[in-house]
Image 1 (cartoon, one colour):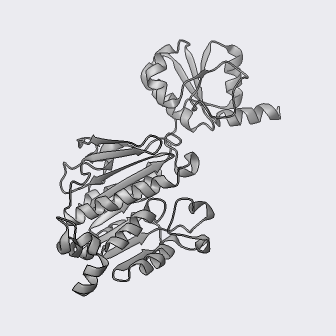
Image 2: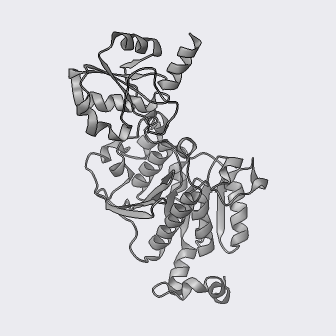
Image 3: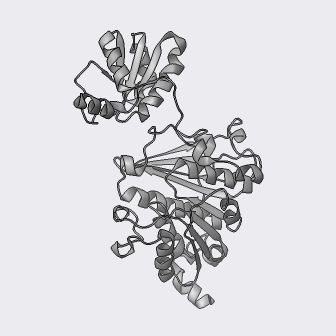
Length: 371
């Protein structure tokens, strides 16, 4: 691109104090890959493309669906059924013809992650599942690659930057050492998300990427920023590397290739899980505390037997109120109650018997109606 065209296109950035033509040329020389062309990836890709990042990779094996359009603003109804990576690349190439956009219509796996990431300077994690998120983190730690992380749920979002230059740098596992149990943290399909939230967080991820490339300002290295749309509260937390988390990451590329992240992130199994029939037996025997760990507004209501309503997040602080020697937890489908049982087992040890209702209250009511 000639100096005349360069200045004309990016003039509003070039005139910024501390940015200048030098900053713009650094953007044009940079190589960034975005994993996931969904809610977070779409705004990040749009602003990085418009800003003039020279080489942008997009990897996603999903296709556009109607329910994506509420938040994934790169697509239209004409894109439904087509590859997200390819459609995103097509739209972005029309936005800026002066940069290179590479689409990978494939799933990120341990077999291709290292090879792909080695070709780029910065990795942006726009994914929505824990197995891929841990895999991206571990690959970036091994390759010493900059990682820009973001996550969203309902009305809130968070983001951070992981530098990965040396062993003492903070990485994603320092925030979440182990994957949560199934149902503990719901994804957008289960919990919902306000369409503007990925736009806000995704744009902030693009902003952090631009700062990293140009040396502008203070990136969120060793910091976690959270944002809530309901009250516009923003919090920024300092992060510290934990000695015990490095052992959770494969030691080298060979071990990384052998790691099954989907298996590692599968729900933990608790042996003390009871079915609906055994639950009914406990109800008849009495002398038990039955805990509804769902949120207060969740339906259906439960009036068939006495129960104590303690949302999962409040359980550790209220466990002392439970007096019976036997405790049974339940939720909607049995996922969160498994986590609740683990928490209570950790608190009471062998002094109380703690069980989780398999299938949740929905399964119990279904059995009750069929009898």
